[in-house]
Image (tube, rainbow, N blue to C red; front, side, top):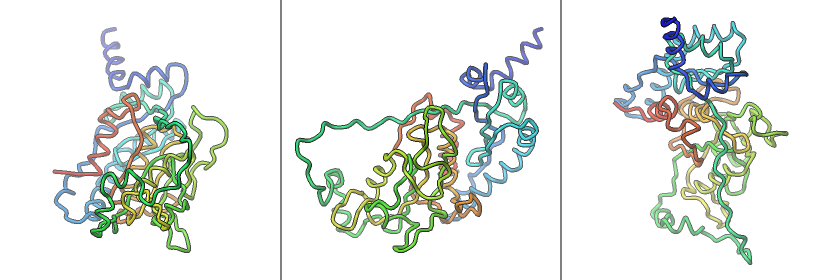
Length: 322
């Protein structure tokens, strides 16, 4: 009896209590972290950004493909929904308590954590003004940090690509279109410039999503992402300067379904930023990675942001050091 209790305790100790609670009576989604994680420290010795990115991508994908194979075979045999990741060596799975127990008893599984959907914190609306003023030529927040002084010296963000992940982006907005890397002034090419990490309806929402799912073109289903990208690079060319770096280009990834995001959708965007793909999700090209990644969303502890298995690992792979 004591031996059996020890076995139960052993597998449960590897599982987030929220996963066990959610799986008590129904299928639930969770993240399976493998014991072996890639060593990407060698990238620190490389000089060029694209060399670092290619090295990290190679090490991460090699480790994931080699170590995930037995688990993926098991998941397919049990007909479980799953999605593998390589930005950290993990697999998103939807399964039952029996599936969780079977996976957690494997020696190649380090931990099983929750993948909760949390709504991002909405900005507070200021009282409506008595009169509506026309947009200023340079918005007050831009002037407050003396960005125009840097522009006057010739530093506008030129040559830099900003990657944003949020509720999506209205790519053809007048203040954004000419800064979108996928727009050449005549035609749009969204390959390597846009990725949609939203593959279906979040359980907290209902009805049709205005962007649909797996959108092949940049789309914003909430408006927040477009706003944040405007703060980064927005300039309509007609004197309305709302962005800090109007000389920079941008690319984007949607990580929330009408404001509801989760660790898996965030991880998918980070993964795509490290090695952008074409619209089919194939033909990765680390040379197309952005120089800067912006995340203008709040992620509380209950969503997993303090879990070292998720974000600490991701950041370390995006910024490898010896």
